[in-house]
Length: 461
Image 1 (cartoon, one colour):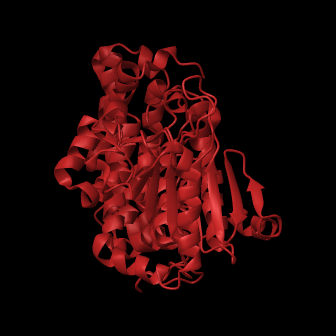
Image 2 (cartoon, rainbow, N blue to C red; image 1 turned 120 degrees about the vertical axis):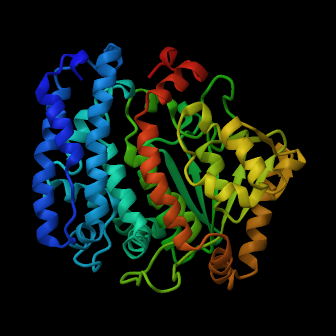
């Protein structure tokens, strides 16, 4: 600490925060008391960081001292969250009577216990920095979310709360039913012959996912699930503008690394995507007044994915939660999380049951690609067709599925999940993911990987 220009006060602060203990039985009064002890110390830690140069411009001593301050604060937040996870969650949800989304829980926690997690304003200020210059205010969000998800009953309650329809979808359902289609910006949806078609439309970025697409995509999934006249859904990418692929349909290029490098994708993107959008494709919607202790009782529909060109990263992750995948000859799939320095959503949980653990390790940790025409992809792709036949193949599969009535589809999906991915297994995974992804998202290694493997410094915003 002293090598970075910090005096004895900073070292005394670190020792005090490291020694802070939360040993009382948790209740409302003790949570408030411990938060009042923690909050001012966390604020002081950020005050120590304020005079330092931007993170990427610090010398070795400054970087080490800054990282030590952040780790010390994150560890204290984790200890508080571990002690008071059930008390804080119950207070924020009226003793589990309210289904509150994860982001709203965190904003409420920031208001109720200042210093525990960052406020909206603090996150907005952090978002104006390049990713390499962020010190990591959002790490505290990961520590708290991880502890909420780790406790079985409240973790199940949070996971099920994230399966409620979004307010925007509820408000726009009548419009969608009346019109039969909606343009949601980076997503377009259409209702036709008993099927809802969801088209990814982010052409400049090869239909990649980011903070601009996530909300509309979840609303689109909600609308297809809620539409009373639709029996299933289809995911497909629209044509893109990129010179190399101009005019071709692309399923998804995964995470938008341009916006990630520029610091425009928040940590919460990962959590909201997998607890909300992706898990709704897999589990559907919970009903109002759901019971976290009952077997899953969701309103769900089967999904078909149509892969053209490629499904990279997050695009490939979507294939692990749908019911059928058709692809055009020559398409390929990959999960290049190693090159990005992050965890690929819930792929670590789901991919091994498709291809086995050894092959999953190769894909996730060593960038193995799956070409849909090869035998290795057979567990991931149901059928492969020539490009000229993909449209007809999609419509025929929809016709067969809708024509059969789909009476037992919802029940069979639930029954399959009992042995493949019960809710508690997903909850346990997301508890780990919440903590580890927070550190990955704010790590120097992420920046180094983007600059080494993706030439991020030369990309245009």
